[in-house]
Image (cartoon, rainbow, N blue to C red; front, top):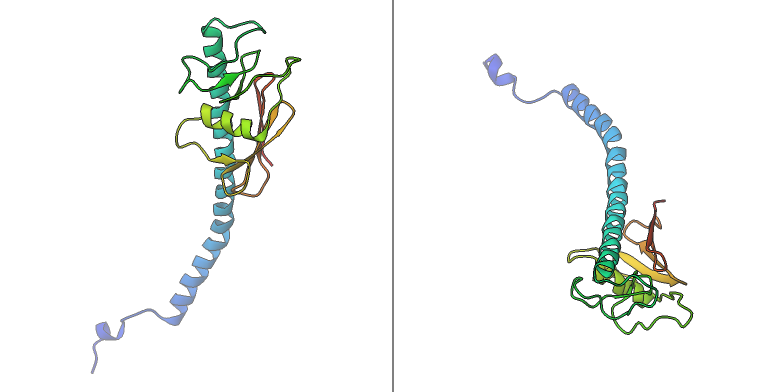
Length: 175
């Protein structure tokens, strides 16, 4: 005859069903929260990158002023003392390219997608999000007039960072 201790091994069917039901209820509440955390992480990434770009623009302008250039006729050669000294600035001291920028004859700033990529890469430190004019990177760069538009591609929400090279403004749009 088996002792009572030997017969009490394992779980009953009712106990297993109760545990599975509890796990299902927890999963129903947890999964939407995890999805929301992913969205918040993407939004925080865009906001952090925007802040880093804004700081880079401000530092470049500060270096330009610190170098003694504060007039509209200032030289637009490589910005001495900033980064690897390849960034070029507009007549107002805002970053516009890393090579071959001569400015417009009327003093306006005209950006291209390639110049936008150059500004991004020159201002942001290593390990920054990647950017290109094509696909397959963290951000896609495009230009319109004096503005650079950086579209965040990793979440498909169309979040953007805009940099206006005529006045240094950074605008972040989270959708």
